[in-house]
Image (tube, rainbow, N blue to C red; front, side):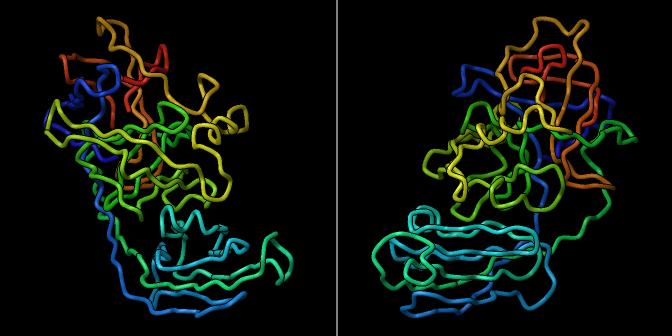
Length: 329
């Protein structure tokens, strides 16, 4: 998430009385994400098996396939393999969302697997039709600017908080889990579409398919009302490969090496704003832009300067949680 810096050492972070028990939500600027959608013509016709490599004509950091017109038989699965991971989609998964996961690189291998053609799945043998109508891709260049710091020095350090994720829905923002499947973000980050994904990863690249989740796009609500009224909230769908909700999957990482999980669960606990700033330390965790390691998960702690009914002021580099309790404000 890309937070704006003020001319002074204090940065302003605002929230609003939201649908979530009147707790403060974080506001931020959207980190621009270069992307484009290009037509792609592939139609397998009625088949029980196939192998096809869908590729973009030049180098790109990521690729995503529009499979919304694909019709899979009940006993078929579509296996998608990218540079570093794979995704397996059923007819229900394609009907629900219509897009693949986001894969690193500029190509994805597409394979159709049907029972009766290797006995991979049970069911009656029938044909499927795989159609790839478009490819979403993007080429982004970091401008080296780090506008989300307070002061002249970026003091953020790399972090691995299992509860935070990078939202990709037109731009790049930070999202935070507050239950097994409910996320919070900033209202100006926009509304998700079928191609939007939330990535539970600590680096700047795409998460593996088992750590990417689609949005319940009919459930998202939010307001982009400026300082004091800038929030978004919604639900995530189970992972198309594992069937797990994100909070459950993230909680399973607790206790494993390198993962930050202070309360032993895969989501934040919503907490009240402290009644006083005295002695309180604020932690900010997110995917802000930076001169180095941009859009990776970073964190920083600093003083809690002041607050009002809808805004917080703090002195650290740009979620906000109270260090003493680890509760999300």
